[in-house]
Amino acid sequence: MNYQTDVCIIGAGPGGALLAYLLAKQNISTILIERSDKLGKEFRGEHLNKDGEMILKKHHIFEEIESLGLLRMSRVEYWKDGHVFKTIESELGHAGIHVPQQHLLQSIDSRASSHPSYKLMLGTKVTELTQNEKGQYTGIKAQQKGRGEIIVESKIIIGADGRYSTVRKLAHIKNNIHNHGYDLLWAKIPAPANWEPSIKFALVKQQQVALFSQAKGFVQIGWNIEKGSYLALRKQSFKPFIQRLIEAFPSLNLSIERFIKSWSDFTLLSVQSSISEVWSKHHLLLLGDAAHTMTPTGAFGLNESLKDADLLSDLLHQVFYQNKEISEALRQFEQKRKPKLITLERIQFQREKEFSSHFISS
Image (tube, rainbow, N blue to C red; front, side, top):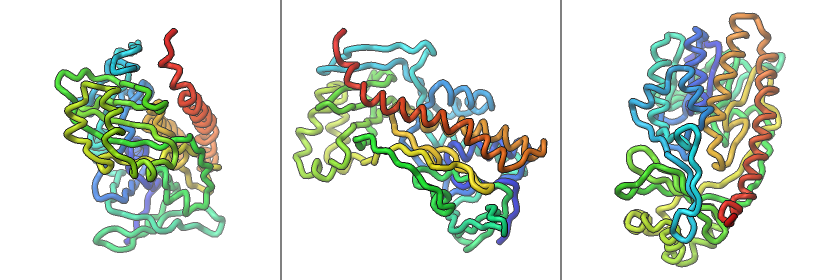
């Protein structure tokens, strides 16, 4: 089957979904392609900062997400020897907001679906990018579950398909990867009774452990380990390892003992940041993690992808309603956003380097 559209977006994560909605609202025909069979696949970075919150409020999406369920964390705490060592209260009234991805994407998609210029294709895997005689990208070929091959002809292609972007690979765009020296063990457990929503940090064997309160009564654990050490770590006894977490946060004792019983109860995340060498190329653009993968430090990833979508929707409005050249609009997006992401990457390195200083008495 063949389709034609103004903009084809590959990847229905937060950035891609928001961009699709903002374009459809402007009556710019948009096809949003997602490899998974459904929206809302759980991911790790689900925390809004003030920038992400502002964008969702700007586009009147935040209120619907709030009705579905979110959680404001009251403060940031640093723990030492099983007790709070230092507390930082936010001037915003919260230190971050946990938003389940399912609630975020459901809210965006429900609004986008009311516009006839929006089409969502689930279960669709991109296999090829098409180009014209000038080298400009003109569409994609994909395999859609139950339908076989489809072809989408598009004036602009947006790769919003994550850190392992297929679009980036097919466009032969180099991705500059930076090692931060650690990987991350993730686990999610029920919060104890009377758990106050907050972000909690501890230093365990000189490695960061972070707890993030989540909606629906959960706590997400992020435990830094030395880069590439997981296989050797798994050969060691699990009990002494998990005992360190209990000693750092004693109130989690019962929940940890019940829900984290072996190494298999952790998920390993390979931590790296990256900035793609170019973001725009011949009517194709990379957005979000496809262009700039962030580490979990500072919870920038989700929020930066929303900022990408917000800016790009304005620039593409100029393309379709003010006769701005496509290449110029995409180049302008890269020129505005790339330096900021390079700066944020440096900030992440600096924060990671200075983390242990928070546990030194003044």
